[in-house]
Structures are given as C-alpha cells and as structure tokens.
Length: 102
Picture 1 (cartoon, rainbow, N blue to C red):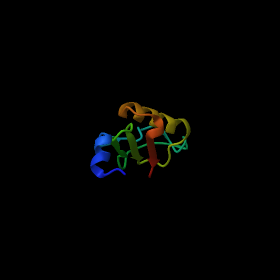
Picture 2 (spheres, one colour):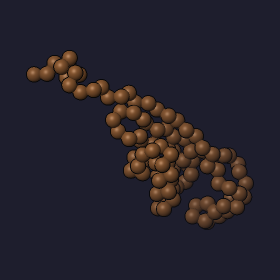
Picture 3 (spheres, rainbow, N blue to C red):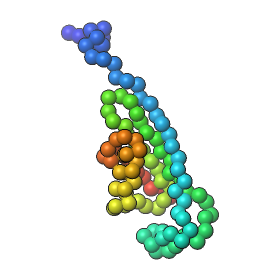
Picture 4 (cartoon, rainbow, N blue to C red):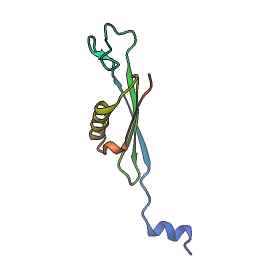
C-alpha cells in the first residue's frame, strides 16, 4: 500500500498550470467581403475583437481557447486560425479551440 509520502517520492510533482491572456483587433477591413462575401464592409460601427487564453504548464503541450467576435469561421478559415494560433503558442492545431460569438 502506498502512503502519500511514498507516492510523492515515487514521481516528480506536476508543474503548476499558468494562464496567459491575449486580445487582438479583428475588425473587418473597409471593402472586405463579409458573411461569405454577401456584402462589403463600408464602415466600422464597433471594433471587433478576438479574446483568448492559453493554458500552460502541467506535463502537456499548451491549450489555446479564443472567442472571435465574428458571425462564423469555418472550413479553410477555421483551419488557418487554428494553425496560426498553434504556431504562436508552440502547440498543435488539435489543441486550439476557436469559437465565433457575434
């Protein structure tokens, strides 16, 4: 039977978890197509943001969560978001969660 003292001596402690936050301006540029190109951006009423956090530490690669103030992100655009964020956080795209919340 293992006691707490012998269990902790058998394996090194897991590093503590850390949290890093980030924000980015993701406002659609004037003249850019929106909603699949149904209409073009003509003005900026309110800036749009992406807000997220990266969970770091433990014995696993980082995990990224980001909430983007857009109506949708899908297909190749979603893959691109995940790939770029994964590189920035030094993790894999499978460990990146992107949501659209507009």
